[in-house]
Length: 381
Ligand SMILES: *Cc1c(COP(=O)(O)O)cnc(C)c1O
Image 1 (cartoon, rainbow, N blue to C red):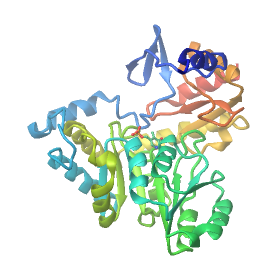
Image 2 (cartoon, rainbow, N blue to C red):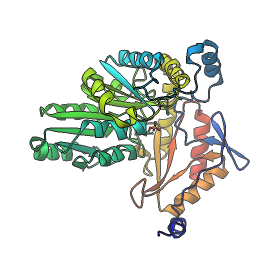
Image 3 (tube, helix red, strand yellow):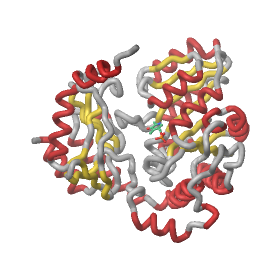
């Protein structure tokens, strides 16, 4: 038998042991072991999840039919409440696309869509830094795959030249804003590349960008004006949308195909209708959050400028790496900043490459300029 205690001890010795922190949320602050800190590790990018006024408004207008805390079934059996279709139609309409399909989470989306779409005659070409859920989707699919160097479209082009004609279809997979580096994919270049061959699909995960980027908050695809050119456009509700779940924008055919084949959609109970109603309530308001998007852009720019040469220059978003290098140093710096009232967390290998342990700041719209200035002063100490 395996000795799991020994394995845990090794993780502890290398500074890689993970644990579930005991924390209490107080709006943009977080309380841990009696200390109240500014939360610099939240995915509530627009600050919507913690807004009492929005919750009150939502509860005030909630229909009795949607006040259900369980769907009690997969959507394919009895769990398909009208609110699901309403949200899908709203999203498809906002993006100006044929169809949308909802999932229980981004993890479900990425581990379900890729395996459903591909087989041994397909090839997946994925950016080296895509999220673990995409990797898991690729591995589950059993489809041949290659990773191209991060945002290196020259490398991707080489792979396409070499392999595109050998497979029935190729799927290029990328994130728009990357989870750990906070840099942004050039979706337009990917669209051009895709168009050089007849058998290429483009799959983009906008988990960190939906709500945050684009004039109406529709993400990098909106910002770069290429929504219609992305075959599979995925996003999540658990981050800026302050809710839970995920969506895919695609053609009507693909939607119908996934309803017939996608296992996490077919074999899992659908999210509670009340959750979908909350997502719909916030999604309807998404174009109105321009002030939030603007404030977030300003503070993000200030912090990434201050961290130039230490990782800040890599970021082009509200996710800003502060690269420290070794695990122990990274943990010490994060503890130092926590003592100063800034809740920031170390990210270590294997989540990031060896020797690039970092603090990953992820800013939210309710963090002020003054708070960022104070953080920068404390980083300098
Ligand atoms: C957070 C994240 C996911 C997972 O979404 P959940 O809804 O939290 O399961 C998927 N992809 C990326 C890029 C993410 O950052």
